[in-house]
Image (cartoon, rainbow, N blue to C red):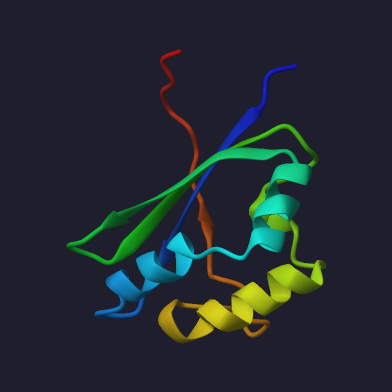
Length: 106
């Protein structure tokens, strides 16, 4: 079975793009392990610098994507860590908008 491809967008607060990048360059090893163990691979996040909108893409061979891991303590701590620089929900999870795939070239 081929992995599913998921994409979603998130929103940064103004002027924090470099801080967002810095935090992800130092992603916690335990979080990285959890993502891999959950079947998430090829996880990329792109930035539209004009709108400060983030576009995320990931391949998923498990039951869900990264946003489905909110019951994990390390994910909740990461959300808390990132909440000051992103638009978030009341539980500090990032506000995400799923994107529908309309084209794919293998």
